[in-house]
Image 1 (spheres, rainbow, N blue to C red):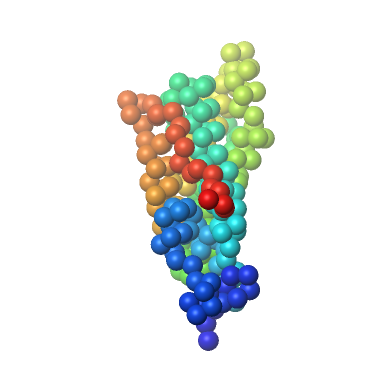
Image 2: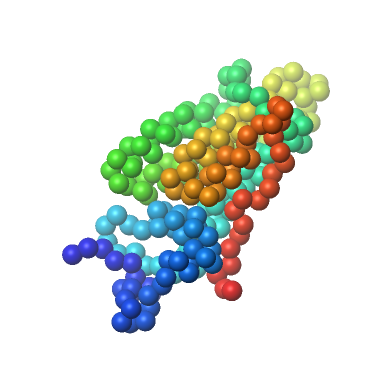
Length: 213
């Protein structure tokens, strides 16, 4: 006995006519979206029901709205407030201690999960850093720090540290996402490479998908 993928509760089978070609899915939605759904949603034990809507919802929620949003927001902030220049986290402030701990632990958490063949746990660890990074932007409000940095050296230091930490989180996420979403991982990594001390403005990596053609 082994586990099955199903469609609307019925096992995938050529004889029933409900078989779905992974090649057609990849052509339509991209390999990253298909790989991500399989890694994030297919249970280790028991059957898993597949629908186009579930694949699209997962890709849009995680890749476009999650990681893609983090990439775009971080690079936009760096260009708006630091002319595209990213420093290295100095530890001078404590604006993101929890996020730093989270992304430092990420490689070990993923390795441990993969050693157990637990892809859900591996991608959960990855996604916890994405969510923590996006949440940090909301709580620290870098636009507020930028508003006060001319009058406050502390605000300027906090903004430098915050942007550096967010960029470092994105770099680590790009590296650790490689086995799961290789195309997006490579593109994300290139976005955060410096040239002449600065980075290029953001370009979309994960576009929103549509369930219906």
